[in-house]
Length: 278
Image (tube, rainbow, N blue to C red; front, side, top):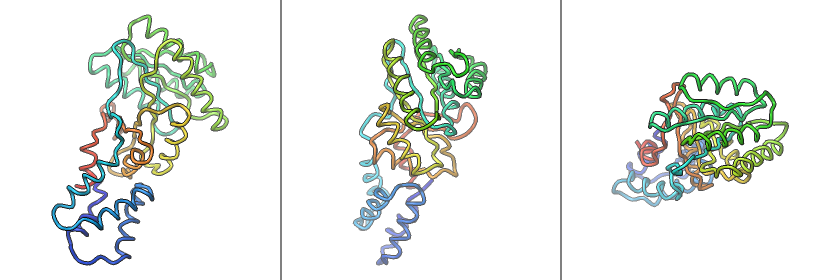
C-alpha cells in the first residue's frame, strides 16, 4: 500500500515545500480513503518533522490513531458466539465461512448459522461452504425468522458443547430501519441463551469512506466490537482501516485479501502501519 511514500520523500528532500505541494500530498491521502480529518492531521504532523527519520515519527503518530481496544478476539471458555453483520456484497457470508475454517484449523469445534434467511442464495452459499470445510450449518426455511434460526443455533451449540458459533445475518431488508430492527432482534434473542462475544462488521475495503459510514450506522445499532476488512489486496485503498480506527475507535480484527479459503487472517496493526510507510 505504502500510502505515505511521497510524503516521506518530501520530508527527506528537506527543501522548502510550497503550499500547493502540501495540498497535492493531502489529495493523495484523501484518494487513499484516509478521510479529510485524518489526512489533514497527517499533513500537519509531517510539516513538523525536521530531519532524523520521518518514518519513525510518522509511525509513532499513526500508532496513536489506532483504536485503544484489543485487536484480538474476545472468546469464552464455553461457547463463544460471534455475530457477523454488514451490507450485502461486502463478502459477509464468505467471511463467516473463512472465520469458521480458521477456528476449525486450530482444533476448535465450530457451527455456522445461516441467519440471512431472506436470501436463499446466501443460505445455499453457506451450506456449500459448510460441506467444503466440514463445518455443520444450522438453517431454517426460506424467509423464516432470522432470530429463530439464530436461537436454534445457539441452543444447538450449548447442548453440544460447541466452542465457536458464528451467525450470518441479513444484509438488506426493505429499508435501513428494518435491517437494524432485525439485527437488534437477533442479538436480543440469542443473548437469552448465550452471551454474544463479538459483533463483527464486514466492510469491503474498496468502498472507502462509504465503509466508514456503514461502520457508524451498524455500531450505533448493534454495538460492533470489531471489523472484518475484505478485499484488502493490492488494489484496495487501505487507508480506510486507519480511518475507521481513528474516527470510531473500532478495532480491525480480521483481514481478507483474496478469494481462497486461506486468504483470511487476524489483523496485525504493526505490520499494517509499516506497510503504509514502506
